[in-house]
Structures are given as C-alpha cells and as structure tokens.
Length: 182
Image (cartoon, rainbow, N blue to C red):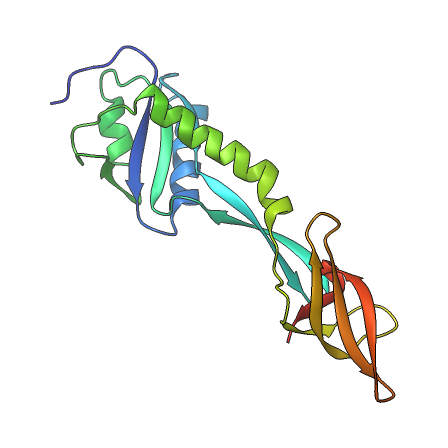
C-alpha cells in the first residue's frame, strides 16, 4: 500500500479518454455527499479554448488539453486513494496505477499556468488564414464571392481579399469573421 500523505497535493488520475467530465462529476459528487471527507479540494480537467468559424459565426469550443487525464488536489489518508482509484471510468494514478505519487510544485505551476495562459491567450493567437488562401466571403454586401487573400493583419484581425466584381479585381478589407476557407 502507498505511504499515506497528510498534506494536500496534486495527483494525476488516468481516465478513459472522453470520460474525463464524468470522472470529474463523480468525484465532485463524492465531495458534496461527504464520501471524500474533505480530503479532496479540487478536480480539474485541463482544457483550452479554440475558436472556429461556422456558418459565418464565431464559435468558441473547449478542447481537452491533456486527454485521458484528470488532476485532483487531495490529501490521501485512509481509503481516499482507493476511493479515487475505484471511481467509475478511472484507470488508476500516474505514473504507477496503484501507487499515487504527487506532482512536483513546478509541474503543477506549469500545468495550471498553461491552462490559465491558454484560456486568456488562445482566442487572440488563432490566425486561421495565410496569404494566398482561397476564401469565400460569408458576410456583408459581397457575401458569396470567392477570392484570394492578399494581406493578413493579425493585430486588427482583418484580411485583404481580392475578388472579381464585373470582371475587375477588387480589394476588400474584411474581418476574420466575414470570410471562411473555400
């Protein structure tokens, strides 16, 4: 059996991929109904936000940053490790399935910092277009026109697109939301 830890520490649970949310729900339910005796303080699924354009609308979608893993801040006393390990959809602890080893402080800070950083910066850093891409205008008076990107302004989040209007090439300045890849 693992050596009992009386301090709160972060542990990594291996979960069946795609079932991380269910694992989090089970553990949070255990916290609420008192089965975990206040020995588990936080459950975290590291996610990142991704921006996609669908039908001309900006859609923010959360994607698992570490699929198959759930982070748990816990004090492993008594049967807490056994309870966590036997939660439905949990395969065991990392690095050894049966012997929980806490994450080092630096690892925790890096993972938690990365999650915060991704949450704040991911939306701003997505540049879905490059010069030369063929795009379709999906919004505005030129909706339905197809053209080629001539310039990308990542700061203003705009593109300059050349389209043919009545046989002439015309440059349009459009936001990222007004075009989609053809």
